[in-house]
Structure formats: C-alpha cells, structure tokens
Length: 170
Image (cartoon, rainbow, N blue to C red; front, side, top):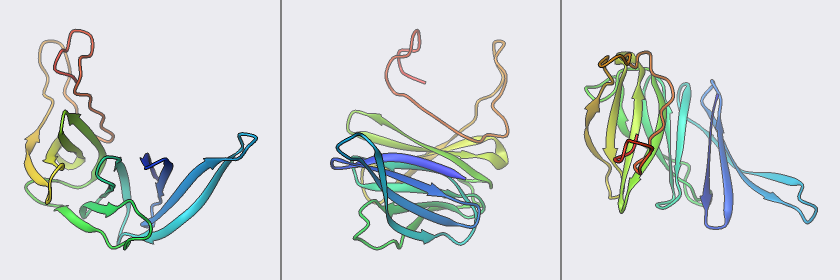
C-alpha cells in the first residue's frame, strides 16, 4: 500500500507496507551480472492500516504514517528492535486522520518531517534532526492568485533548494 526507499551505509533498503498493517524491510543488491536481488531483513506490523513512509538516511530511522493512529518512528537497522514509537498521535491538534504521505526536507543540518493530514487538508511539520522530534506547526495551501487549494491531501514532497523562480524551494 506504501513504499519508501533509502540507504543504510552502502545498502539500499526498501520498505513496503500493506493494508493489514504489515511492514516488510528488504535489502536490495545486484549480483555480478546485474540481476537485482532482494533479501527480506525483517517483518513486523503496526496495529492498523499504514500508508506513507519515508527513510531518514542520515539518522538511520524511518517513519510510517498509520492512517488512523499517527506517525511511527523506527530504527532502520534490522538488528535493533522493530519496536517503534509514536511521535505524533492522530486524531490530535497536529493530525486529523487519515495520516497519509510523509516526506523529509533538509536545510543544511536541519531536517524537517512533513506529514499530510488528510482529514483537514493540512500539513504538519516536525524538526527531526535532534531527539526527540519537535513539533513545529501546521500549514494549509489555500486558493490565491489563480491557484486552487490543496484538499484531500494524500502524498507530499518538498525541496528546500531553488526551483526555477522559487529560490527558497517548494
């Protein structure tokens, strides 16, 4: 139902989740002939349906959005516990179910986690480069100057560097 990709050292890691809460983590490599090989490293579950996920390659974590419950943080190292922790519960003032897409945006040493809060067509933001994650607020994209609003949010992506005329990113 959801998929995210990241790196753990030299390893490529792929995480997939399904509507029954199952999370599967794979290490992806290639053999000498270039054939793709995927080895399951671990399998675990969250209590209900997850969707969005994102990997923080720098800090060695990944985040899963459990639609009706909130955002989980897990260690990317399969040798460590698959016991994650909820960093933001839903429903709450931060998130209105369904919790959907997740993305990371880096600005130098600062890393932001942005989550799509589908229940109120908003986005919630945490600073996640320290411990614990720090909730920093929410925003919505409203109609203005011929551009429509963002509603029924699902996925999300962000970029902090220049994008054309948008020098501060998108």
